[in-house]
Length: 411
Ligand SMILES: Cc1cc2nc3c(=O)[nH]c(=O)nc-3n(C[C@H](O)[C@H](O)[C@H](O)COP(=O)(O)OP(=O)(O)OC[C@H]3O[C@@H](n4cnc5c(N)ncnc54)[C@H](O)[C@@H]3O)c2cc1C
Image (cartoon, rainbow, N blue to C red; front, side, top):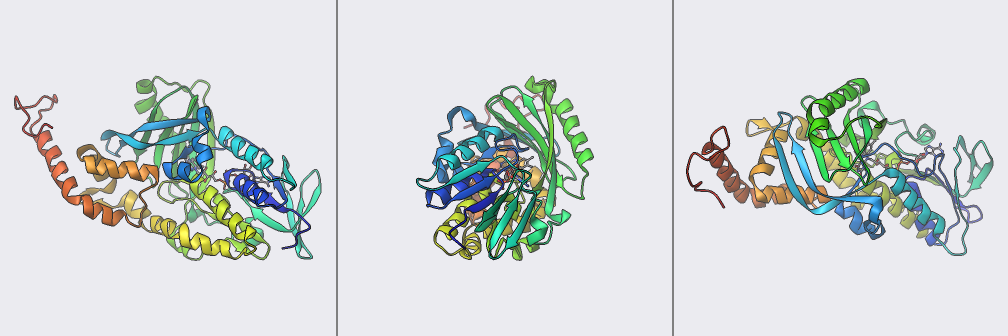
């Protein structure tokens, strides 16, 4: 890496903006390009407690985010359960989140040059050990190149093979004006994905995601619209007047793709969605975008760019790989004669220990790797609480009134 040119970052979403801020704070000149700068990128905007702990300035964002404490899960057959999340999910509009991160990049660094340019990069070329970055406005030189251009990264095929359709999800959704304090997730029959309603400060992001090739974008949109019309709008008091439609792609890598994942080469690295760093079960990408940016910046500031891949392997890839391995079983598998999704919702309804586990999963503090041992640990209480719930149901008639004057299992 030559020191005379700045590090160029293509893409000023969460990954690119944080990488820019950290590199500038570490004393590097930075040239960051985003064709739109801060914009309402199609997204739920949900940030977990784990992400807020890692990046406390996001926890301090105040009115830019909506801290949501209650979650409703709805199974494919329509069972519903609401539970309290011990650690709220902070739901951001992406306009606000990207704006906040870009502003930090602009202000980072003393005695270094940080340029945040609203320009679309149209061409990237290697020139005698440096990079030539071309936009309609100008031509720039860079010593190192960070590709943070998101899932639609137009330069990927210049460096790596394109992302296979089997490694992508399709999403469609609406930004709907109004306020709510309930996060909702509806699992669906025959779709590897789900519908979400994520309430932000002054609107909700309601969307649907499904595996590319399994369900078309138009079918997903139809399913979402039907669900909103039939299940949500009337009950929530929202309406679609003034709602804005969105659609985007989301990386959802298979386990074999993570096995051979490449994220860097001579003089370049990819971070965030560009590199495919998204949880293939939940679609959570913000934490991975931020953390991969930080690991990449750490490796560059230490003068060991190769270490970026090593750091990813140590910290993020084992979880993502495991998620990719169990994703199919999560969405399509059976357990004790029922679908995993139905079981998960009924156990959440019946067992306080299971609700605690769900709360930790939504907080991002319960990983997949030690999930099995946690499940074994709580199994006895889940079983007894589940049994209590089942018995309570048996003692309850269809109108919901107890058949007994005193429910013997009432707490
Ligand atoms: C519908 C949907 C819902 C989601 N919900 C959640 C959620 O609730 N929680 C969560 O954690 N994750 C969620 N994700 C994932 C999350 O949105 C991404 O993981 C995250 O945005 C990745 O950040 P990034 O910086 O890598 O890429 P992006 O945010 O996509 O940023 C890339 C940037 O590059 C710029 N760019 C691209 N090409 C060029 C070019 N040629 N020149 C200049 N600039 C360029 C773009 O303008 C863009 O600003 C969701 C994704 C989708 C699609």
